[in-house]
Amino acid sequence: MPHAARLTRLMALLFVVILGALSAAGIAAAGSEVPVLPMEPDDAPEVVLNFRRAANLVLPDLRTLPPRDVELEYVQDLGRVRLRFANTIWNSGHGDLELHGTLIPGYDSVLVTQVVEGDQGQLHEERSGVFAYHEEHGHWHWEGFSIYQVWSVDLHGRPQEVVASSDKVGYCLIDVRLYPGVDTSVRKSRQYGDCNWYLQGLSSGWTDTYQAHIAGQFVDITHLSDGTYVLISTVDPEDRILETDNRNNSTRLYFTLAAGEILVTGDRFMPADDSLPLR
Image (tube, rainbow, N blue to C red):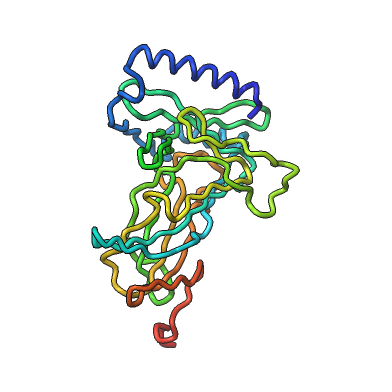
């Protein structure tokens, strides 16, 4: 987005902050409730119109990369077993993912709008959920950015049913590093680097990673028996982000549990010899 347009929008947001401060005790003193934003059906007239407009927009395209640093964590005092891993989201689209926040008087969350630039420089705005402050991390998250699910599989590795799941995971969206092979002559510098409430994003060609040790970065698998499973990580599970393709938002990682140990076999199903179906 042009710097002048961004500066104008930020000045407008600062004016909103002043108004919010006059009408409420400030965001720190606001209630803990997060407003519920209903999803509109795909065939709603406004949604259909937005998708028609999207043909002239330079959109992001979010993809989840295969999880890394997978390990089991045994929480002795709670008697729990957690599957921990690092999760990376890549914006593979031509457009940036840019999220602007507006204070909501009476809440400790912030209304989020996705701002997209068109191919002729025009701007399009799309309501896209909320930012909420997370005490554990000490910064603001875009709520519901990802979800992590463990599925049982059949003998061919096809997912059968969800046997363990995280809650929807909030992210602070920042540019962490360029995806390997990105043309650095097109995108060299980091645009989004702060976890604030008024502006977050993920630039075209950049990735954002939540490391395995971060609070909340796990799935509780205490009740799972030995066997083979698939971890499916999905970005934007509620389709609040306007992007070019929602069909590439998930990734799979197969693993086997045996005698308290984990063996990660990768993003392709690798059955044990004795589990192969009869031919």
